[in-house]
Length: 534
Image 1 (spheres, rainbow, N blue to C red):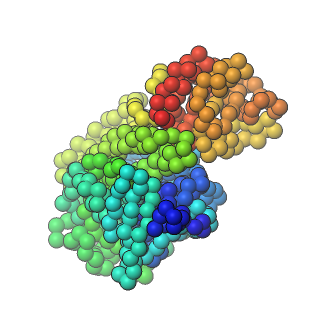
Image 2 (cartoon, rainbow, N blue to C red):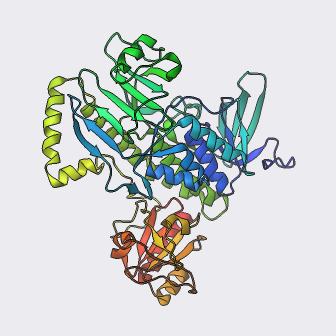
Image 3 (cartoon, helix red, strand yellow):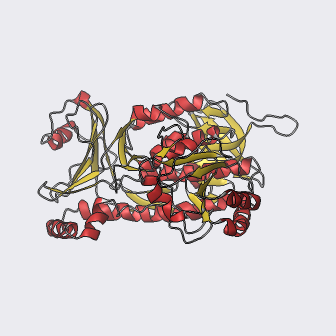
């Protein structure tokens, strides 16, 4: 590991560019993203190692994409089971519909995948240990933090209380969960509500379920969710009736056995985890306090029914970390970091509401409401637009930035994550688009001329981008040009970028589209980008 900055002439404590507080999946992802970009980062985690609790179990395509950007590569395939969406059942257990997305893949990956959180955390921690840019402080908790105009000082204590220490960082990311010390020390409240209903979550081993989708059962007598996972694991979630359990108390094995009886026999040693809990719908009032940022459960908590808790946290740090890297290397001024909250908080807000709404509709205990829901859903499925909305996961809000590090324009691509179709190299190989984009910005010319390229490059600020010629239609990309060229493998590239023929697409490091513009529009786009950077 690289030694922190401890120049005695200027500092009395170790100094890092970024301190990440919290070593769950969101904090570990943040630390890996920063280290992968060459940023000196320290990870501070109160536990002695990663967690053995399988809290999160569902990962969407955008999160998988971020893991690849962490540099995990093929290790992602070892911990993720590509799934086929969500299957909803009516009050009698009959299938209503399956929500799969618009296709089997989005952003190049399965629309929904199952995973084991302990495996994910171990993989991320192992990756971080291999990075010289990272320092890891386990069994260490943050006691307090104070800010000056130039840095944040963190007071640390070992878990056993035998030792205290200090370190400083240019910036801090609080990924330390719903009871965040970082959020507390910044004086940031959360707004929203907590719910009275008690749920039981049981993670089992040696399970027979081989479904690749999660299953939601809208039975008002016992709302429940079943999520098969990898290697014989399966999660069962049951809404408890009054008197069956108290949130936060260990459930009786007899209760677990009774609720699982319709699905399987269970032995105590086959129960990996059994907990009771109440869920929350909360959003931090602010996500930034000076040099400190909140991410993951520190910034938002939501019911599990939409499967977006972890995924929202990964979106947070995927958005924030490349911006911190640009500020750290002097490419951008600190004002760029203001776009983190303006881009992420509105989407987290609507995602919390969507999660609550899905639970209220599917997990109701009111028999009349359940009957009306089933009739309404079946009627909607017969209508082409409404049916597509349900089957294509239209009820889950997808991020689109109306403001932030984007240049407004007429293209529907602006402010959205760019999909990842297959491309064709001049040699005939057909990888996915991300394989040629690099780790920084990318500038794609969609059937643009050399004069267009010269005009665009002369106008735009230098952002260390990868230049890429995109050749559409039946034409083949050729080698030997002034920049790498790729063609369309199967028509998906044409579908995605064809409306922008003759234009440039500027991609951010997080694969969101910052701008779509012609060569003539490049000077105006350049002015807007410089305003964000400076």
